[in-house]
Image (tube, rainbow, N blue to C red; front, side):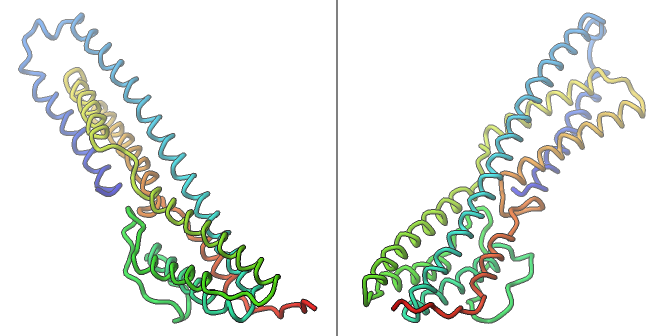
Length: 274
């Protein structure tokens, strides 16, 4: 369920709970409308409101922390791609095929992960099907990146300098693959479905109680409506932060595009090693 769908569902449930409470209010016996009973209801509502506010605050903090972690890891991933590209440039012409494959992988990853944004210019990368933002895993992109690793492993160093570079390239590639899989795992939503259902039930009970005790009038109706909108927008923000590669609040592609820009820069002449 997307963030918009979750927010709309919660909004409808809250208004439905308020409407149910309004319909039940005339059916209550007179002894259930006494001042003491209403005070007890207000105390219980206050307890539920406090508890729900704490849970919403913890969910928001957890989702924001997860979103920041993904953003940081994506920047790390982009930096690792740049470092791998630089090492491939240092190796020389023998490493040009894996370097071009790495550049094609980066461009294809940008185009498929952020389909709503402009594609990287050029036709040097394959057109990969749009990635599911909740999974972020693509067999085509994985195969393309693995081909870079196979090419690196097949390099035959011709001297001690290139032996050191080849070993360094293998370590850099391992770091790239480790970070890629960490990003894939972090793309999955962390909010538990049953927990989210229980939170929605608590909120519905609160708004049902509002319908039981709120006076009939336009001001009370507008106040309850604004409360439902506020809580629904909070749910929208939480779900958006929990799904960092989809929705309105998504991890930006700036770091990956900067990495691709570095890869597209012309090769500088290598200094003589003599």
